Length: 363
Image (cartoon, rainbow, N blue to C red):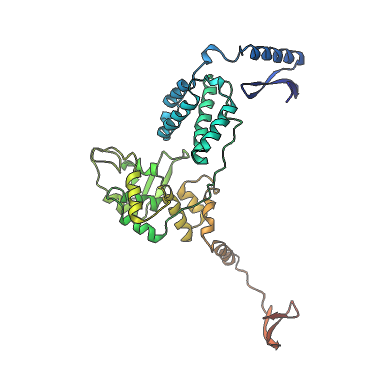
């Protein structure tokens, strides 16, 4: 990209700052744009870039703490963000925000990829990118060095779900407090966070509906309850001091059930499985039971059918059912006398004669 270029009637300047390409609209006057560009080059050479104001000389670790307190603390991912921020502060700590370049981020990405999975690296990059986006909005940074850094490709198509026999084993080996949680997950497709944050006021036993107001995509949805789900919820011992359905003796909601779930999996002899895969199990078993994909999508709370389509291959005869439904609706009859019975045989092969073709030989 040239230093000065024209787009429409406006002249832009393009220059590099700390490894990041910056492009800005200046004026309809080319000479003015050239003057501004020259001034930028001098400022960069002298290390006195005008964009780096005194109030913008913010250490990365200081801003990371501010980001967590103001922005991330309101999110469900707060605990995870804190862990990632702790790692990022070790890498980028001591630097001002404006000093961190795309090359620095690429080096972090490359180094981290040698230690953890691509998806874990991507989560860290996502938090770092979000930090700089906030910094730009809050007028504490001028550019985002993560913008030019690509994420690793992840394989999100892999599905792990439980067969009926595995489900029975898992429930049989679950602790008393874990079992009702698993039954809800298997029969509603709710996420772990949605279940653990479930409140008694969210449940309408008479209508058989669970109301979810705080969901991943930000949209409220209603979850229908089957009989086993209703009986399970009714059977949960209610703590009069707590609004939560699943809570400890002190009335506090379970922060996590990772340990008890891992113990149940080990006793049941189930490997390579996580709690979220219960949601995959819910969807997979629905599709294999003949439930259409759009209904499955609505029950899962997916905004589009794209995410739900990953389960389509599990129904071997769903396409056959589709054309069967069409046949019933159209009620088209096959033309009469199109085919005649076998009238003769030649060399041991049956020959069908019909009004459209001379003959069709069947082995």
